[in-house]
Length: 367
Image (cartoon, rainbow, N blue to C red):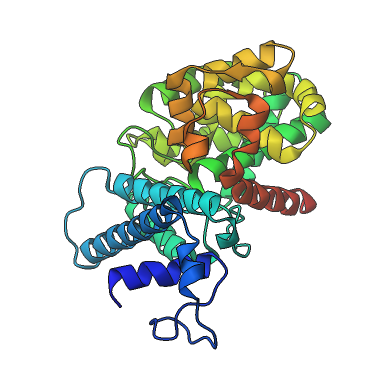
């Protein structure tokens, strides 16, 4: 099919009309009239073309990376960055398309992405995207895995919260939030690399300086840990580590990551729960400590977290680099946002946090 005929056919489908009978798509009994095609504006046709281009670019980079991996070629530095940007561009172009042609919004998808941002027919592309990242971010051969990676995260979160002075019920919330962070940062995979960064690695994706700070803070927290079993486990992992990068020992990476950025906030969990009763919102808040720590802490101190507004372009850039306000012209044009708007825009994390909640419930049911 010639390109212009393809665009007309897609335009007809997007507008809710069947394509022409000679179009190389699924057979349909009716054909769109020239009048119906003419009803599309130039902006709508441009949106269709832009999505077609972005979709093909995403397919192209997926194929390129798969071929490189399958033939054991050397990958470029940060091999996941081009994949990530192509996926963002595809979803962004689709949002622009559905803004221009709302009838193009289709069915729900298995990833929980709002249908206005993602065509469910392209689910296999995201499956391939995830598989490629799994390969590119595979742990090194000498990584020190845990047989109980999820339970480790929960146990460490609860122990730190108790050491900070939280009661048992609120410490459970800390454990649940900690598991959410693990899923948000690594999709629940331990000791992974990072195909988009040469700095961040491991089970909580920390940089070297963050790891060192976490190790120092853990030494202070450890003095207040009341669990002999947890202390014994920690000492075994320290002895096991040897000269390995601490971020490639699951236990130590999680321990240092939580101690570095999150344990100091655990005392605020009772107030956070009152402000944000939804467990997923609580996880999102702590994930924002990973992404934009200073503004998030300032919002917590403000006394009106949800209404606290940020407008610094650098901070908005950090959010977009983490798939928040990154899709479609309307979102990308935002120059400021409240934390309530930010939480609502973190929908790409929802699926991960739901998995974390299910895993947390399973772990605690076995206690």
